[in-house]
Length: 453
Image 1 (cartoon, rainbow, N blue to C red):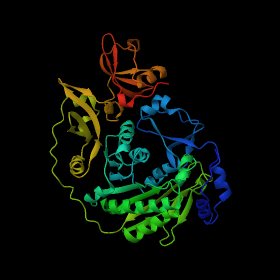
Image 2 (cartoon, one colour; image 1 turned 90 degrees about the vertical axis):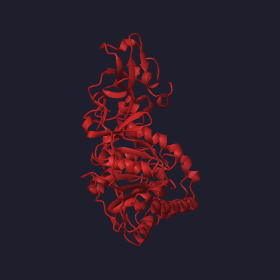
Image 3 (cartoon, helix red, strand yellow; image 1 turned 45 degrees about the vertical axis):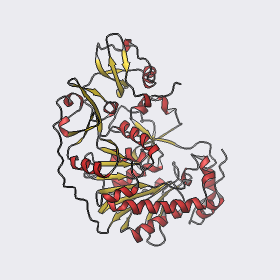
């Protein structure tokens, strides 16, 4: 691969004190990038990481020696890990350093698709938090829903709204993550085609769009709440200049995040307000280009009245068979499907239903029929699922056949089970099968099935 980095971008970076232009260009001529994964601690059946190198700023992140075909790993489809660029895992360190994991809060990931940063927040926030994962672009919402379902947390709501919609929730969220659409220069090494799309005009256009997104959505952040702003751009116009603009116009103050000097992260200071920024360069660490800055809202912010009455129906008794500790959840219906969210979030659901367009909320348990529940695929992958449900263990070959929505022969049923049963691989649930006297019906969703290989 011969990546020719835009000369104007290289020239600008060369004005930074101590920037090693030659090393930066050499890193972009490398044939292979870095592959990293982040394991799901809630699903301890994940890959063996004992021989893998840790991502220094993320205790659940690991580097792989080479990039496998993830489609052919059933544990990937089970949500046991997420393939994520190592630099962006720095958000985990920011959450912990700012003590945002110490108590329940409402968090908003504003530009969430495909879901890497939302699944990260799901892992690192307090277990009783509520996460709103939003994506503006309709065509990208389905993959966001799928990835959040795989990750398995029931305390997540996926929305499909323009950032301006969150103005109608003033002071509602405690933490806002804005991984803003950008010119993408930090991903040149992984996506060589994006080099041809880069221009100074595109940088300026992105900078203007980033300001609009932030100005439209920041009213939703409460006074004293935290903003994490990030891009995968190297351009000052999209990073440090945005930090100065935030301090000047949006009623926030910068917050420093302690880092280890051995990590290779470059700490910068914006020109006007000396806002700490954290830059990731591929010639200084094992990761792609990334930028993050943190802020605390200092301006007074009128708050949304969250004290509304939420009449929640009594959960059906059938729920106890399917949902673990069912008393910890309240139930609601979406169409003919029964869903659960953690108790204490009843009012939040009603508020979000009134103000936003919801694509998914909590965990879909299934449809009530003839005194029982026809289980949803979402439940199969959920951490809310009852652990006492029947399972059938599949070897890798048969697990892949199941994921192709192929035929599973009755010979795998060595436990003399019948009815709804979880197909599992190495203890991780993949989805539902229905065991009948002479056959096994594969209920893996058609839209999720993998291509034949």
